[in-house]
Picture 1 (cartoon, rainbow, N blue to C red):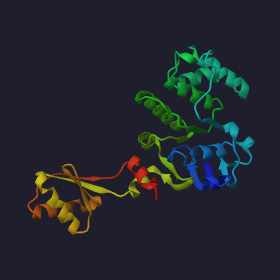
Picture 2: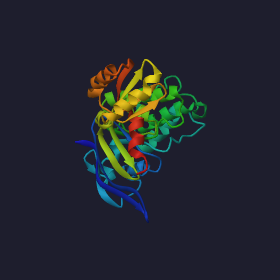
Picture 3: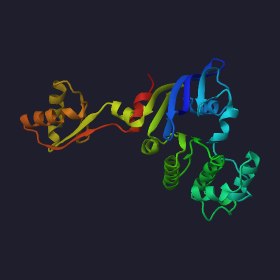
Picture 4: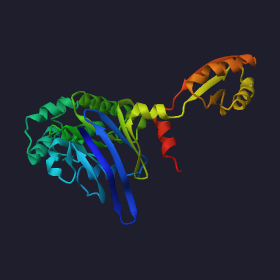
Length: 299
């Protein structure tokens, strides 16, 4: 059973194709990052999953129920898209109780959720006194009112400072450990890399990768960073490396070599045989941000 499974999901607005044949799966009990450049179709996809808009074609399932029958699964899904909206003059707890009443949920969950999202001691304070991070956490608390199996969040760290971002990261990790599947859209790729076991990547409305984050990073082109003891040897080393079929680029006092980790010993030997002493020899794999820009650049 998957938390989310879509096949050929497409949304057209006249001549504009916002999402084009999206196909991916999100396993249960995981945190899955949903990334792509602005305008790539992330929010449109989320809106189709939540039945806020109808797809032009294709199919999808949420918790093994078709997205064409939202009444069968929405009670098990929590969502926060485009930022939370609350009454400024009411306290955080009062806002949650209003939403619980509207949704038919027990008020008994409100104190528990206030604690869960790290607002202990502030639940009685007016919403208008909350920091941006606190507002985002209250929004997540509202999304958790149904005690969902799946939590869908669109840019939950938008506008937060580093401390606020870490608070949200820790909260999402805790929810996943408690068995909630988290599907989180974000443009903060360093955060997604830290918390997401799985990843769905969009470009121009099309899915260009879905699967384990680590598998994507291992697919990325590795390099070797070499630093000669003498910077005067940089050009000589570059020419040697180029001549054996591994393109290299000089970057300050470093040489970045297009080669995998297993060629490190050969590079060291090549330098030694040509009287070049290396101070540093480090295999490097691109991080998610570098991989993202490589995969989503204009082609």
